[in-house]
Length: 513
Image (cartoon, rainbow, N blue to C red):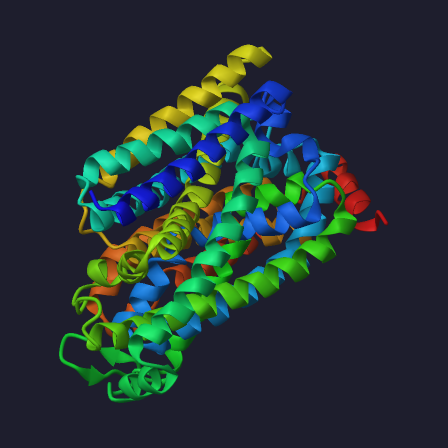
């Protein structure tokens, strides 16, 4: 092992150790001793932590791997419209949902998303809890798997460490601090991880431009590829030609932004913020960081192509290879002496941060769905606080194990896995959340029907209709989101309006100043 590799490993180990200490700190502080503390931190999250932990847990490994890799291999079209959609979704989610969800969830004393839906509609049979919990488990497992895959890829690319061993080691660290410290540990580590992600992005941009021979070379090399810098074309790496990014494809890609309305790990931050008046500050911070971080990530992919053309790093011919572009650049940086090796270690920690900040939030949300929503609410098994915490922590370990199995294939694409899971949440919880917050007449039956219809349509469109191409080739989130909305509204109108008690709570929430 070279000196540079030793320095990078030491930096990463120090970073991982700090994450574990945070989990231990909140565990001893008592921030994970009750379900309310474990799942939403006792609703005490400050505006900065709310914003940055929401964004860090949202970005996942696609910020430092998926997006740069996509830009490297296909140019700005798909990446650019995805970024526009996500930026708009982030802002609108904070603007429309955050404040009202904080108020509503506190009013009905809900600490998980399934519990919110159940109590919002007075679902005494807890059917909504069951369906919602199953949706969370089904889609969070592959989402978490993509994060574990990123950890394995990082260490395998850097040090030649066996992919599976590296992936397991990373998962152990994530699971440990999540199980120890609960929501406050997850949110605090996410804040720190967002800082590391930002540092990694900024440093690699300047280093990459220098290695590419300057900004002029970056632009010239990109312009030589047909459609590479064109938002309405994009580049086809397979046959080296320009593509066509028409209106339908653009709308489909912008639909990524709809996913925000249904992301449980982001919505939980809204429920946990200490006061609804803090939402405005959080919204501004989140929106600015979201736009800048994603734009820089895309730019790094473009820079990376020029660095490859200059012969500094290999030409990355496949989607899975292109997602290692930041790793490749950091590896080159580490060869320039002690200081640069230390910086490379920070960059690698940033990639780990992007992965861990999402995986920990997903594990926490999934564990709450099992122990709180399935076992207690739907199963009707009342647990004392100690037993509830045992169920929650055991679920964290169980879901992590399944995610490891799904991530066993090192050639899977981080971006593609995340896009499917994102669509699943956006098309199920997204319409249900918006309707529950803004439509007084919506009913329990409408919510249930919409959740089921949206979930089914995701699979039907992705695996049944999309392969046919043409108009069916659009991102599955958009048609499934629309189907959910239509079914929810139609079934709500066809069933009796909610009872007086449910309507009274709705009116109270909406008239409260």
